[in-house]
Amino acid sequence: MTNRDDLVVACDRELAVERFTDFTLNGLQVEGRETVRRVLSGVTACQALLDEAVAWQADLVLVHHGFFWKNEPVAITGMKRRRIRTLLAHDMSLLAYHLPLDAHATLGNNAELGRLLDFHVQGCADGELGEGLLWLGAAPAGLDARGLADHVGERLSREPLLVEAPGKGEIRRVAWCTGGAQDMITAAREAGADAFISGEISERTTHLARELGIHYLAAGHHATERYGVQALGAWLAGEFGLEHRFVDIDNPA
Image (cartoon, rainbow, N blue to C red; front, side):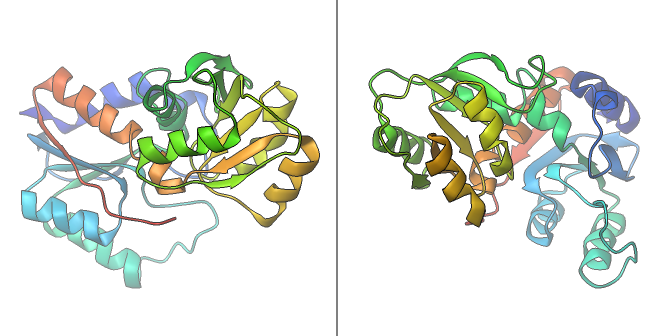
């Protein structure tokens, strides 16, 4: 078993949380028992994930999307009360990392997505690896827009929404950022990318892609962010000798 606070300090240090200005609290969000033997991870701290943690008798729940977001109501009522009550009633901790988990050079969502899609990482457009959020790399050879979409769909088990830019052939350079990063498309084009992948799409994204001349793929917010938290959970298990289990709560978004 591991002391909870030692585990939190190790995560905070590994993910360099102090470097990030975020929309939420990174780190320990709800304090549970002092010792940790079992860690259950998932993308979002929804009620279904918490119920799985209770059933498995987890000591700590590790997520990418936790609680306490900027501009949300502060009152602990309704859905938020039920979620927090579940944690407190079973003495489980909630540990959440948002932007630090997106950016991490080896355990992060972008690193894991690039690895899954066989992209040869060339760097970040907005900072060093481990700090920046917009990643750049070389796509597998011989892929056009439809070929890239098929490749992404096969690897993620989810067909992406594809917006093709006119007059583009083989994709040589690709940019990506998981989750709700659709507005990075302009920066991706300025960085020389032929295609940009994020999780979500907005109405404006279609027009930007066509007029900027860059293919765009919306591969799913949840689908693109399933992998960083798994990698972090596995890292914790290896560092501290813990049991780790990832639970994928299906989400079409």
